[in-house]
Amino acid sequence: MHWQTSRYVVDLTTPRVMGIVNVTPDSFSDGGWYVSHEAALEHCDQLVKNGADILDIGGESTRPGALPLPVDEELSRVLPVVRHAVTLGVPVSVDTYKPQVMQAVLDLGADIINDVWALRWIPPSGSRTGREVVASHSACGVCLMHMHREPATMQAVPMEGDVLPQVLSFLELLTQNLRVLGVDRSRICVDPGIGFGKTVPQNFALLARQSQLLSLGYPLLVGWSRKSSLAAVTQRSLATVATLDIAERMVPSVAAAILAVQHGASIVRVHDVKETVQALRVLAAMQSQGSNAK
Image 1 (spheres, helix red, strand yellow):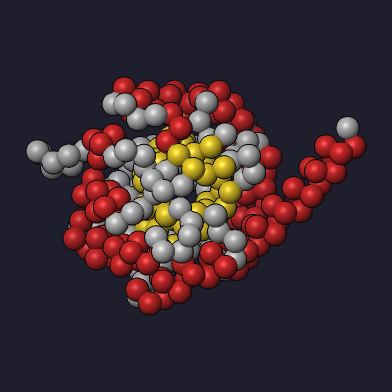
Image 2 (image 1 turned 30 degrees about the vertical axis):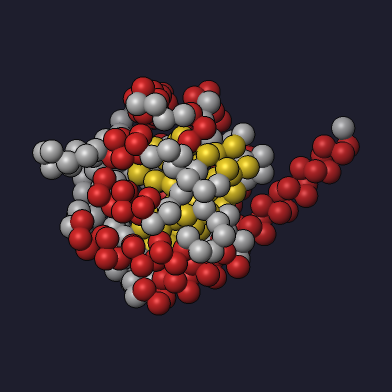
């Protein structure tokens, strides 16, 4: 399987690591670390050195309870970073739901639009939609993610019942809508949206049955990195979950990334690139020996 993007055809026969670059003061795990352009550019360079196959740049936090950011502010955060990242020899993804930002970063050479709203966000009257921006581009990749409600309210009233069929039908409808606009299926990737309006048991139920999403016929991109659900199952006391040090979430995050790959993910979106790359190499070594044994 391959993923067509603006400048690259990404070979997904081996799992790929997408490194997170949050140019935000308020992201849940690394807010403020790379808010200066200099720090963000250095972080891009380091992630590529550490083995990132794709860079994912975001200027607006989508943590639970996050409020929307004005377009001009988001553009001022991400454009200088995108301008640098497209020179590093790897596909560049931009995490945004705003059509104006999508168009601006694609004009700079970005390869992928990674939208937590799955191109459903409605811009002000008369403005182009995200679907129109993506459909009008000749080759950019796009990732459509499942999100229940919106960042400001998604965890206040999370989903109910069995989430797998709900996520499956949502992604099926949204990918079909994009295909109707002429976007080739080779450009589309889907994300089950771990943590976006789902309870801890629901997130792990998605992981356990994630391979069922492959029936859609699109590559899976999955992001478990540093999510609170990992803290919830690794801490002895619920009182320590919110205060769990980010460094302590690295091992659970890498474990979840490996499990996601074993359950069919083609791309894992992570903060800890070096450690995830190393773990994937161990998995690949084991799998290659298993194939040889046959």
